[in-house]
Length: 275
View 1: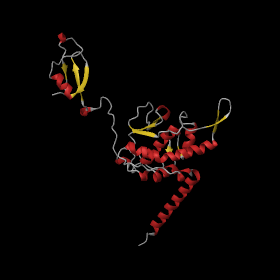
View 2: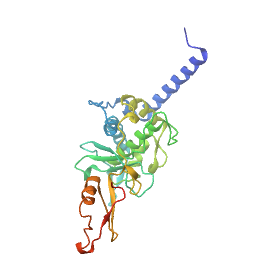
View 3: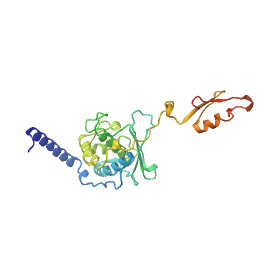
View 4: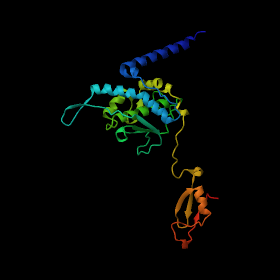
């Protein structure tokens, strides 16, 4: 039984749009089609392994964009002599961690520590607030979903690793634009072609990011509540100490004297949560 006319028309339209997209990519970024990436050979059980596998898949994209850009871009040194820009390819690849980012700028989703300062291996850190859920678009990006945006942020940090010293300008901006990046370079988003590449050449080869191990989260001090392992002890002189239940038990069953005061002062220790 054949498809209904409306269904067939929708399918034909979708296939036509897909063909047009692939033609645009072939015209603008031909290197992504002949760049063969190595698929991960091991099982992916953590988000860090997932992200490092995505790095392997996207590295040829950046290599090709850097080569293309170096063919047309030159800078002049202090003597006015043209100098071809060379990228710094991390010789030992990428090490990706998912952990809260301690940075002054609010809303930071990723940082890159350059390979030059870390024994040849670029270190990328992504904020765990990015869930990579393929069913949501919490970030309101015009193309793709949360998983697409997660991979884009990873790509953003990878390009930083290639362009030490350029910040969000210069060679960094040039390579990102060759990879169809949109928006401000300080808060970039994937363009429609880049989103298509991520959705068809990265995500299908990886398990669902949202199903993998969720990294730990640091609970802010003062908000740990009853789940904290450390108990609060207060001395008569106002000294505040924290210790595990076992240590508190030894103290409370002992002499219960303040370690900062003389024995003669009989400054005792109290712990409301013990007992």
